Image (cartoon, rainbow, N blue to C red; front, side):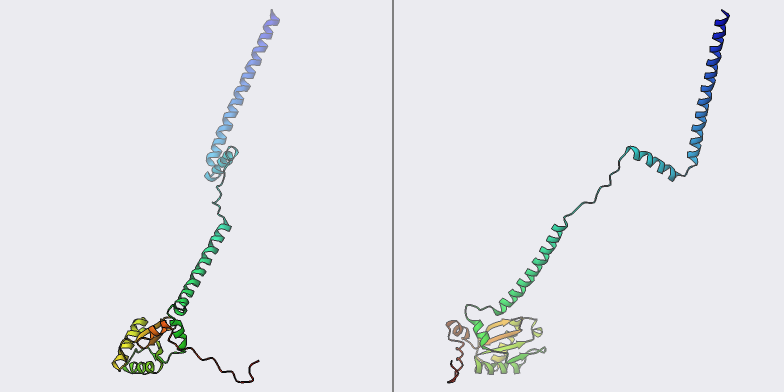
Length: 222
């Protein structure tokens, strides 16, 4: 019975010792936690934020959205297409202006334009005068059609206005009524005047006369 009592006392002392050790360990853990909390409170905020981000990075995966992609080839093709279109439009405008000035009309006025080689009268920036009207009258009587070079500024940049003014001046100097405008070319700033009835003669093929072929002297033919 004494041995059993001794064993019980020994077991009780061991339990008390284990309980005391466990209590000390818990107390040490509490002290460590409080110390860590105090250290964190003393740590700069930025450092704490870094620690938090590091912890979060373990569980989260951040994906940076890529910028929207565009097809470089398609964009380049579109740009080249726009440039080509612009060049075509510019070319068409140039051709349109040239065609408007140089196209052979159905009434043969182009042939008359070429028949009158160069302007025989010029109107400058000061506009048309009575002297110009008289000169136009004389030239029409001599040549039937006359090219007149015109500075369009005094006529509001309009060749039709210039034609009307010169016709009035020529008629005041004795030219027949209804002088005709065969052609007017803005690019050349030139008006082709004609005597009354010239357009009818052009359409019928009576005017301008055919230019004679150059004579070939004997001995030049092969």
